[in-house]
Length: 605
Image 1 (cartoon, rainbow, N blue to C red):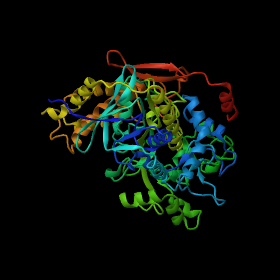
Image 2 (image 1 turned 180 degrees about the horizontal axis):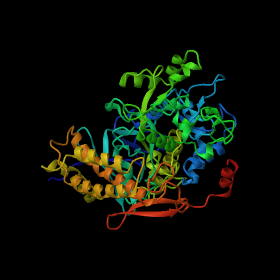
Image 3 (image 1 turned 180 degrees about the vertical axis):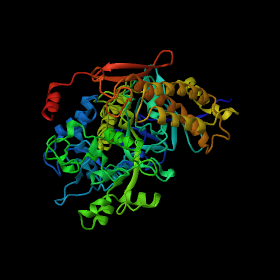
Image 4 (image 1 turned 135 degrees about the vertical axis):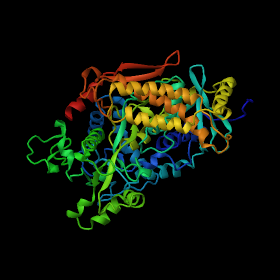
């Protein structure tokens, strides 16, 4: 094997990922006049952020003036079961409104109230209508706006590139090495500060709403560079993904459908969500469980249906109906928005206006007219609450010069993310990551690149192309996805997760000997072989953290430990690479919350 040739680029800040978080970080960094590079796995405009539909959560009080950042903070902490990084939850609640208005100033077009304010809709777990939205295409509008604004800032973009490893100079980052997916040529990006904004891990599971890029790249890059991962057991399974036809299984059905009045029914036509309303959310004086307005989330005036309880709860209720034989013909349940025709004139036009993407999605992909018929839906792997352990203010990881923001970073959401908090998370912490990455780069310039480290990484990446007779990377990936879905999915137990950990070790050996025919140009098999190493890291982290947390909390549900255990109530689960290369799991106490923040939670009940 010859010595791979590399093309070298130099930047002061390198951002890996071009979704909402990466673009916002790039805009912030470039606004200071420094040299910024953005590497993305796909084309600009194809980031998974465009799939975020329902809206971005911000307590602007445009629909209900009782809303404010304190309520938003309390809702986020409660939804996260108080495992959140409380500083991040505070910053997010305080700054989300400013980031929405900033997007508006940059050209984002939001839906409007009658008096011209940005319209906000209800969403699961939020006490008041809080989601600023553009129909059900909010993420698309965010990406359009950020790209239009950012493209003029002098940022250099590298589209359709895969980053293989973070390069180190002692205990600080020095840059990254990767290759272009079209020609297979290797590239080095020298940079004293790197921002990870690579999104989630959904492709570790068989059924997911996530796009093909979501192979846990940022999580694994950070882990191999020596950074800590946190709370990887908390994987959110969105209650409503498409289930039929098989070719579209897992594609997201936005919570906005339920926010606009959609209800969940089983095969008997019954609204089963009334069967299991937590006492926290129940009006104990209500006499008729079918009168949804009597069941409230937050307070007696909210008048919100149980379909808008937190996502983990709704997902488990759907799984219960399916397992007990009350599911739809294709293994889901029914989501019905068409019923509003009983209450509203011109309901069909209203649905098409409020949910245009959902209308076209079901019409074109499933042959269902959602203005007339119910949708079949079921849970789908959607979001990773866990990720790179970062400082709540600066977004720096435990590796010097390595920052993370968006879904790849842990902390804001705790054990369970509230709908809509993800989009505002991107811009709030994307801005902060870009800002602090600039500060670090200016005070720690000129890292040294180790050429032998680069050559070793490049040669390892080429090995699947040099071998023959090994496992197909596609087969290894499919087996991993099946195993994670079956053994580390919505409902977990110790024996199955232990089997998954053994299975991951076996698949890692197979991945290490995988072979790919062809050459480095236009070779998706090679890309899959590269991605496998990242998928195996995040899969093991999820399984080991879930095995360690012997309770049910938030999005983590243990069939063998179905209740919360207060012994686990005050710690995060930390994962890092040990000196021998093995994965280490450690429990770490959450720092005490300042009195002014704990008082807010007490005040909000």
